[in-house]
Image (cartoon, rainbow, N blue to C red; front, side, top):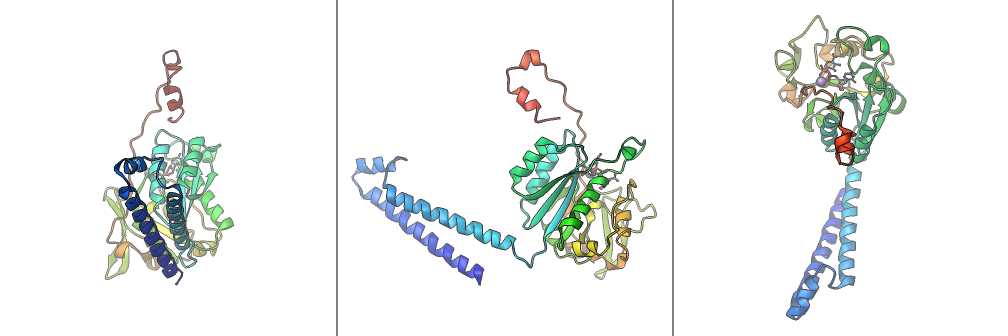
Length: 324
Ligand code: UGA
Ligand code: MN
C-alpha cells in the first residue's frame, strides 16, 4: 500500500516537472529571436520558474531515496553479514575496491572488514567510507605462533573468528557469509543466501583440480560432495560455498573456525553440530548455477622506492602513498 502511494507521488511530481519544463521552454522559444538566444544562456531565463522546477526535481529525487530506504529497511528481509578477511599487500586496495563495488549493489547488507594487522590501514578506512555501505572495520592479527610457523598458514582465521564474535555481540537474526577479498561474486548469490534458515550451499567455480566444488544433487536431494581435495573432510567445501543463519549460529555458542590450514571450512561446519550434510539447504537452483568463483590475483612485488632527488616536487610523491 505504501509503495503504491509512493508510485503515485512519483507520477504526479514527474508530470508537474514536465508541465513546468514545457511551459518554460515554450516561453523561451516564443520570445523574439534575440531574447530567445539570451534566455538559452545558462545564467539567464526565468529564475522563479527554474527554481520551482529545480525544487520539484529535488523533491522527486528525495521521494526516490525514501522509496529505496523503505525497501532496504523491510523487516521481512533478512540482513546479510558479510565477513571479509584482508591484509596489507599490493593487491589489497584493488581487491577491496572490486568487492566493495559488488556489495554496493546488494540491499540490507552489513560488511565486516577484518584486517590481519595491528593497525587499521588508512586507505582501507577511506575506501570503506567512500562506498557508503553499512560496515565495521575490525582488526584481528594472526597470532604470532602461526605467523612465525613454517609451512602453510591459517589464512584469514583470526579475522573470521573476530567477525563471528562481532555477530554474537551485535546481531540477532540474518545470515552470515565469509567472502574472501579476492573472489568474484555474482550479486545474485546474495539473494540466494538471504533466505538461509540453517546452512545453505551452492557451487564454487575455479576451485581445486576439478574446477568446481559443489554439493552433488540427485532429484533435488543432497547426494554427496564434488571437490578435488576431499582429504577425509566431512564437509569438503570451499569457504565461498556456504552461508549460515545467524540464529542457527547463536544457538551454537562454541562454533568457530580452527587454525588448521586446509581444514578451516570443515572444522567450522563441524563445530555447528548438531548439523549433518543431509540438512544442507541447496541454493542456486539446486546447485545448477555458478555464482561465485575462487579467483586468485597474481602476486605483485612491493614497488621500488621513489627516487626523491629526481621526483621530490612531482605527483609521484603522493601517488606512492597510495600503493604498496
Ligand atoms: C583458501 C580458502 O578460500 C581460504 O578461506 C582459506 O583460509 C585458505 O585457502 C587457506 O586454507 O589457507 P586462498 O585463496 O588459498 O584461500 O587464500 P587467500 O585468498 O590468500 O586468503 C584467504 C583470505 O584470508 C583472504 O581474504 C585474504 O585477504 C585473507 N588473508 C590471507 C589474511 O587475512 N591474512 C593472510 O596472511 C593471508
Ligand atoms: Mn583467495
